[in-house]
Length: 245
Image 1 (spheres, helix red, strand yellow):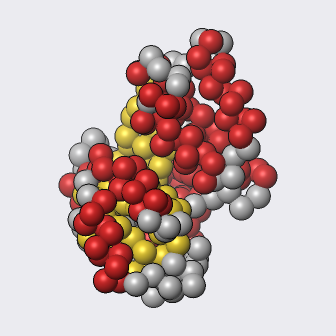
Image 2 (cartoon, helix red, strand yellow; image 1 turned 90 degrees about the vertical axis):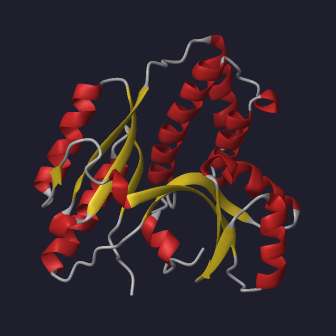
């Protein structure tokens, strides 16, 4: 996928090398464990959420053997599974809004680490709700359009038939918007129509954006995002930094 689209700047993807892929697998593994614990069902054929997570793992180049081993451990109860959801909110340099979604087995440890990152790189962690109002929860399905062969009129027809709301064409991709709970099903329907689905998830989309003009602010914000995403407890990082031209 092209690296200059608005979507790719907001939803930063990793997995380009073995180390990054291992990080991604750690994060997705936790999602799978929590899903199986909450639903009591380790069979993807009868668990739509689990099926979506397995598809997510495969889209991030996680080997099938790794996925199968994880499912067997989770089904047998031998895999550690005491994670809980938590969301931290705060501000980066110059007031950039940041939301950090985590799955952790130790809230105190995770909160301390996230707070330290904000403080060290020119921001501050705020109270719950301090920036959430700046984001809208939407389903987002990203389609590969690197060759720019997608027909907008035909795509609009397919999007509506699949249950989506709208779409936008960006550099190398088509971004389809849906209700948060419909992202996976819309993505599956579009895949049946022959589109290459790069991602189909509920995301936090910013309603407004903040630009950074000073080099020092840009440097610190970039490092802040990197250290947050490298933390094993962090599942997703959302921000409203307009870091594209």
